[in-house]
Length: 521
Image (cartoon, rainbow, N blue to C red):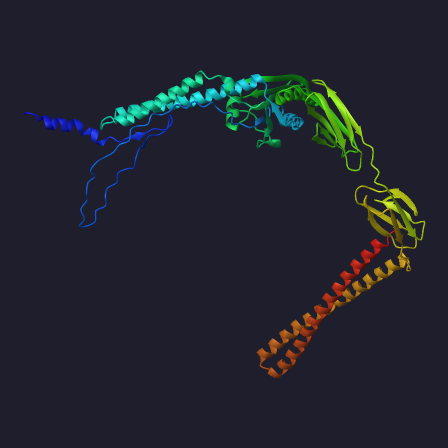
């Protein structure tokens, strides 16, 4: 059988008729059809469908390689504390596994910033490039698989799609080569980052003791530094091992070990805390023990508030520090302090009280006692310093009612207090109020049986009424009903009287308590 040349030509050209132009995005992305997709024309009955006279296809766009420098998107340096593991530790000593890390956590709670030295920044840069290379290699592998699928398609190779896949592979390989030869100094990493302590769900918001590698745990939790340890008991001694794992470098820069008796084990914690402090700060440090007088004094270092009230340990950057201690109603204490690295110092700041002016307190009659917040200050006329906050003053004199009022630094410089005379003796006032209460209580008690008896008689009369009706004696039943209604009315009236007397008794007891408080002393 002879084959016609025209038929062979049509068979060769048929697969090419289904080719679609496609464009490509960045490496690892999906291919998309260039141009609008062809949809079947909807024919109206009786209408004629006209086929397009020409077709257009877009040429595949060559994928451009991504030559951007990786960016450090992590804006915080995260620290985590986990409960310590236990080894041969008795049940009654298990509390050490969480009490020791909690002490460390609280001791380091005041640190707010982590400085990234040069080696640590270099480690972050290397980690960024390594992560980016892993993503690129995964993308290249996926692209090769996609291209091979296109080549092995049973309907024949899609030339434009295959070309687009090749372009993506070239772009991904160019990205890979760029990253491998990238100058790491081009990657910007901050010199310092805010320090954040990530909370767990265990005791004291610690993470549970580790059961997986620290590297895996840090990756899952997004932690840069993990603090953990081991507590074990050997022959009556507690062995303490504190470690810190740094996720960026994959190293353990601190491993503190000590042994002590159980009652002395907490003495080892401050030394471990000092080593951790240098790691968390990432730079040299010194400590200040702040002990202000008055106790509510606040400490400002270089213009920044760092502590209020007594603070045993404050971690600061060594060098020349501008110190200011302030408290309401006191003059500020300003001084310059120079600290060396690892130096511990105590700051005992005694502030001088400000003078808000004086106030002259007089009374009519004179000679009354003046109390400020229940502290006796003298007798009128009296000159005293004004307080800075609102303060209660009481002026008292035998035979006169006490007169309370408030003063502050904005009060006038003179205050005259007229004392109203106590014309009725305090004992007499209290006695009358007490007697009134007892009378009201007695009337209430006397009134209680009335509604009770009336209600009981009403019930008996009602039973009698029902029996007469059952016996067929309506005339006597009507008389009994009248008696029932009278007893029931007495019950209602007695109840109203008893409730009213109870309310009166409550009023009298409140009055008695009020009078007793007002006239006491």
